[in-house]
Length: 296
Ligand SMILES: NC(=O)c1ccc[n+]([C@@H]2O[C@H](COP(=O)([O-])OP(=O)(O)OC[C@H]3O[C@@H](n4cnc5c(N)ncnc54)[C@H](OP(=O)(O)O)[C@@H]3O)[C@@H](O)[C@H]2O)c1
Image (cartoon, rainbow, N blue to C red; front, side, top):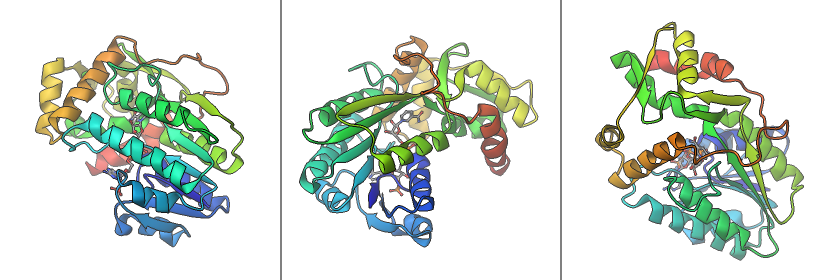
């Protein structure tokens, strides 16, 4: 049996689906039985609880051959770094208590840096905790910028006719489809062919600047002249707070944008066949972003 955290989310849902399709038993973790019902209908067992609750996680990990772990983004939490640490410690405590031997952790490029990268620094701290576990094999996946992040500005595009953010138009990042992360994670959870603490970067099919990604979005939605505007950091942070994100999350996301623009969040391996994944941003835009834009 394989236990999957964040099973209603971007990566966890597809990890669970790939595992079920391949014939694995899956325990799907989330906070709501209703939201997990789709996976239960496909054969998963639901385990409902809070990621920061070590007792719940221990029960959910017990008996698993491998676990998929992540630190969920809870954008309303008052102190997001403290929340990341609390969840991270709960995960590590549950790994020890349950005796699970194989762990895949969703980290990020930039997790080599201890500070100055916003929420990614919390993933650096979690890699440190996992690295110190004895007798547990850990694969830390370090993907680039999720294609799914572009959902966040579909409302802005639809209602104000522009796209934008705090990341500079010429900042280039490896961008990736979460379905491709899920493929790699599911395969690793089944094959468990990693030993010790292993880092693996996942860089999407190519690096894209924000301007290039914006151009692809504009083409896909039938607005090839769509402009991408870089917001001032203070304005970006204030707009996130206005959208209901906590002050702590707004500040960390702004710090992350600064780190992207400064080139601090980057691949250490360099691009290779092993870290290049297949789904193109054009394909994702046509199949996923356009329907979401139409429904916005
Ligand atoms: N976005 C990026 O570009 C990027 C890049 C690299 C790494 N990452 C990392 O990837 C991770 C997120 O992965 P993801 O996108 O697959 O996750 P996600 O879809 O954002 O969230 C996963 C699930 O977590 C659950 N959740 C939210 N708050 C929770 C809480 N307080 N307790 C328990 N569960 C909670 C939610 O499910 P329920 O509400 O149903 O419980 C949600 O569906 C983060 O650690 C992020 O830093 C992101």
